Amino acid sequence: MVRKFSFHGGCFVALTLFIAMSAFGQEVKPSGKSEASSDPLRILLITSGCCHDYDFQTKAMQLALKKRGVAATWDVVSEGGTGTSARIRLYEDADWADGYDLVIHNECFANTTDASYIRRITDAHRSGVNAVVIHCAMHTYRSAEIDDWREFLGVTSRRHEHKSHYPIEVVESSHPIMEGFPSGYRSALDELYIIEKVWPNASVLATSTSEKTGQKHPVIWTNRFGKCRVFGTTYGHSNETFQDEVFLQALTNGALWAAGKVTASE
Image (cartoon, rainbow, N blue to C red; front, side):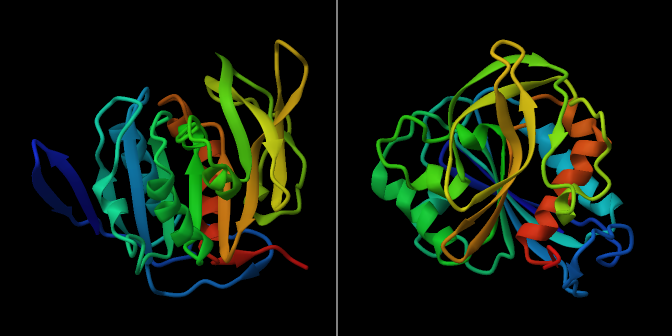
């Protein structure tokens, strides 16, 4: 089931779509310890903002999980327009994330800076709401003085380099998120984000190398933030990326790991 929430001219519009999904775990068999259940994942997707085709990306993510046998119910909040500054009304409620197994952040609001607003988001995650963070989520709130969001992400980034087909080097091949990731793989046409800092509780799973400087930058990682698990990737700019089966498989694996459905072998 997908419930899509958007706001237009102050009016609340709710659209409910029903998608038949197969039982969890039929196709995705990542390594490590499985903690699958027959209950569908309850997913909240926050999306919108500058620079990307969010409607296409939303549909691509939903279809990718369905194709891989992951049963899920989706609430999609698409609000804030196409600018770089917005306040999502859902976040005004301190209990905004209650009831969800996973929150996917695919929003892009670099110039929203209000500290109390940002901390309502990060406090929910710190308390145990697991997350997936994609591409421009890394540049969201980048103008804010506080570091809470960046600590939650697990990386600090404020800029990106040009679009290219970047080779992806796997750093942790034994992690279940990287299950089946092909050697010698190049990304779909996408941007390379410059990572200024990897936070102490983040673990880099894969990197790409700048074509300008030769410096390696994390492109896939996990993070622990308080009680929550975070999966992150800086790729996700282009529609080509959201049509790439390797990316979509890693994204699915990352969502399952973040939601606690699989754990790395000890």
